[in-house]
Each structure stands twice: as C-alpha cells, then as structure tokens.
Amino acid sequence: MVRPYALSVRGEAGKAIATNAANLAGEIPANGTRVIDLSTVLRGFTAAPRGTINVSIAGPDRDIQGLYQIVQPAAGGVSNHVMVRPETN
Image 1 (cartoon, rainbow, N blue to C red):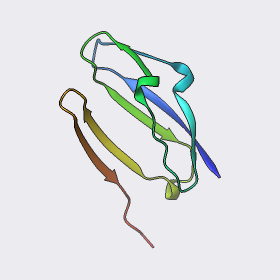
Image 2 (spheres, one colour; image 1 turned 90 degrees about the vertical axis):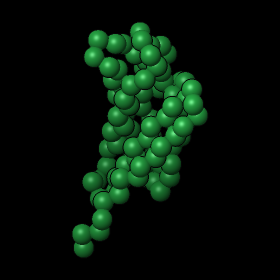
Image 3 (cartoon, rainbow, N blue to C red; image 1 turned 30 degrees about the vertical axis):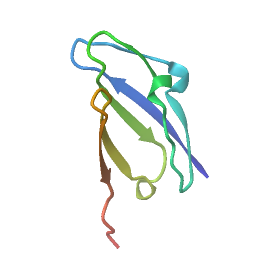
Image 4 (cartoon, helix red, strand yellow; image 1 turned 45 degrees about the vertical axis):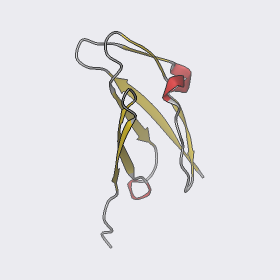
C-alpha cells in the first residue's frame, strides 16, 4: 500500500519562493520513507533561501506520524524532531 503526499511551500511575509510543480506530490510506500531532494522542488527565492514546507499525507490518522526538521545549509546544521503520538489503547 502507498500513501499519496503533497507539499506546500511558504516563504516569509512578502517573499516568494518559486517551485517546480511537477515535484510537489508523490507517494510514500507502506512502512517506508521518502527522501525528497529539495533542489528538485525549490527553484528560487526573492530573499534569503529559507521557508517552510508542509507535507500532507493522505491516510488514516493512526498510520501517519510526523517529522519536524530544520536545516541550515550554510553551516551544515540539521535538527530533527520526531512527532510520534503516544499509544492510547
């Protein structure tokens, strides 16, 4: 089974980010991971290259978990925060 996903990109107020529409959607395999090369998604910025990318995944709430990631390419820094819901059984 696969789950379709869609990316939405937002820049800072008053700043624009050009995207490649062909790479704003895809599928994630069951029990799998999808690595998205942002150089194929983001095409240009009207200011500093920073923004927010939201990923929406179609599937039952119980099957979807999240990851919050901050990347600082100039310094090489990456910060990951896994957002996993506790079991409620």
